[in-house]
Length: 379
Image (tube, rainbow, N blue to C red; front, side, top):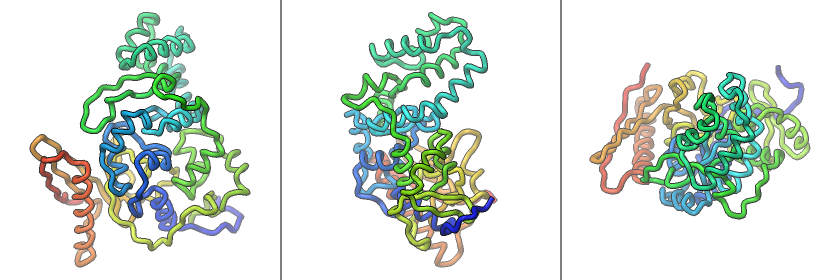
């Protein structure tokens, strides 16, 4: 339903440029890795490499050691937070955003497994207490933790028990898991055990709305609910309404923004960028048309697995793939549509190759050669 207000309209390209600028994707930023992780409210991290690719696309002079060092010093960590998925957060956000996210998708995920009956007869408070004691004694893998709990509840569904301790406790994936170039299975301990002097307080909802708009705005209430996995955020937006700038999309959706939020001209150049699977740029709005067209959206996923994608002129324009061996790295760029003919197509191809070479130079293995090729679009 169209709004009756006269809020200024922001078209798709205007929303695209505003979001890219706040996501540090219009130009690479001089921010340090820890500052960038905080500004972006974390990096999606189901797999271990995506946070490194996300920062390489956004930061000038980034090296993978920058993030690994922060992880080893416990300034950042991997933890289940937004949408009940693993993110890399600063220490403060790992605690605060986990506390805020708890009442959203995290509690809903556990409730789903309880409703299925896999935890019948299981005292969830006891599961939390027993799990806390075990992982604070020493970090344990999910398998080790589950085996200990099954001794007390042998009839419980093992997967449901895993979900129970995952959802009831704020569990950090300890290093070496997530370090660049280092293998490490998932081993868990609590945020209390892992971090020193981090306030054990959930993030303030209103403050998080403002931070979200700073990183992903202009945006609607539903957009932020999609990003966070929380519901019932309308009250917070209404409290903040007098402090916010108001717009509407071409579809009539009310959009909120910081009054001083960056909103570049829609014709601002947007260079190519190679993004990892599950990058939050693509997961943080209910309406994703600001970054990926409806025609292309289905081509960015297969089942529950996201593809790595690249941006051309600010929008998702194709996928990219890596084949890595000890002898060679091969990167394949797969556009969704044929590149234009003539000078425009040659320019786009050259810009993609330059960005691909930069990405591999930053994140490739020293001494291992690489090659870059194009795959024909699947029409």
